[in-house]
Length: 336
Image (cartoon, rainbow, N blue to C red; front, side, top):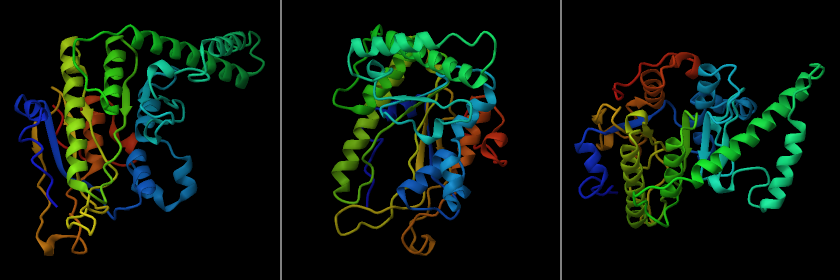
């Protein structure tokens, strides 16, 4: 099936021409799993071996959560990793010390969500009464819980205040959930939050049927949302502080199925966006020759996704990648 000319008429092409877009081709990992849940765990944990043990997988921490634990050890700030657009925190940002925060939108973030100002205020009063640490130090567990609750309380207030006060002349597309999430991220960055990792979502790429129109629409939404976000960062003077990275749990098979779509595949592309990337195309495009396909149907991966993670960790976040990823991977040369 043809993946249409994404760059022929896209706004992302402008970023590519301006040296702010890197395309990494043929990304995957050995012996790939094509289950949505298991493969997403693998990408979010940064560990293909975790799939062999369901107990290990359920208790494991995500690669970005581990980054926060290592880089900010002893720092109780709950805002270091934020996920926007989903009420449940993704596995990627969950760490042992830093659990990550997640919310649909900044306006709804806080105790009891959107149940009204009076309910929220009552919850905050209760938390505030619990928050003072035990002066005698008699119960460290209680102190930890109340300290965490107090920090989450103040964080939710700060996030809502910063987001609600944000104004931008940049036109973010409407009816585009990714655009709304990135608009919120831009607001929080402009507000000076201590957050080091933002995680946003775009669903819908599981194109088993009617792929052509769906894929075009999804890429149009991605294109418009990311470029609006990048323009907003440039307007703020923050573009050089941010890299945006895209990933999906797997690619698609080469041949079209009977429903004018494609099924779960192996290798796929990743995008890295921002002035801090090494622009251009990285890696060879997997061969489409029949004899080069895995089982005659799937693209063969050429770049391990953990090499991209290693590049982001070491070259951008300034953190050794081996303690985070559990073993050494040569960072892909895609970050300046």
